[in-house]
Image (cartoon, rainbow, N blue to C red; front, side, top):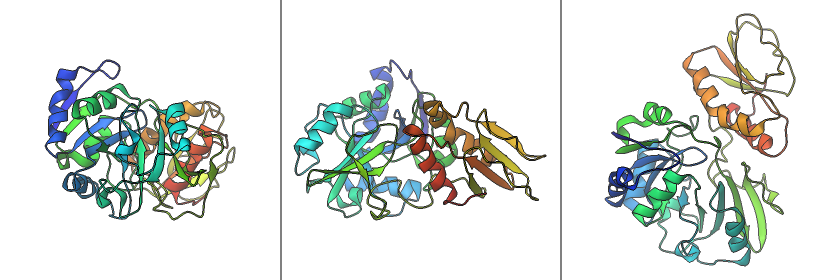
Length: 320
């Protein structure tokens, strides 16, 4: 694996061009988006896209998100571009919003897991944007980690998870948002929230009855450390017990039991900061090899609700 270090705010095209050439040749490149690091391959090349599944150990029935530039024609991927789709893209792209709509036949079934819809977003991170410009083609790019493990928010996380399974790693430091994009499906003029994120979409109604593989990140257990992990109600104290663990909480959290370690996510009300720190905290706690990890829910709206969604999936809804 080759590592290319670039400036996150002003990447140099000459530095990124080797990564673009690897992608054009059908290779795998991990790169930062504003949310988490993605594992990229050509979206319209089924063999390249399949390499993503192989590298991650990702099941074939879990569809990928396709990344584009906001000025590209939407009918490159969507078979029908409705007024609602255009309005969402105009309002939130580039940025952490993924739109799910009917796919064109040119989108390989491996990318959509055989579904008639495709998930598309336009990242705002300067490195991801420049890489897309250099390649000039859509890139499928789920999180650059082994499947179902904690998502990567730094190049070190990617290297630890995937190592030589990828061709190039573009290191541009930590990602600024820290949790995955909001996903909204557009069907018959109806907006359905499939995954919460840092973007709130007016009029989108959550559908908890949608199949778990209708969009990425909807599995009941996902974003999970290897260590047994439990959720904790906002403001609650950990019940006494024999386990020695790590509490991930906030500045106003109850003190953990004797012998436990505490990792602070900062002020509970600073939900953007909490989101940015969550996955690094989960990974650090996991590396300490405790008996148990306990993560306190934020209990906050907006981005806080998206963070709580990730905590719920990381713990499989198990509570302490």
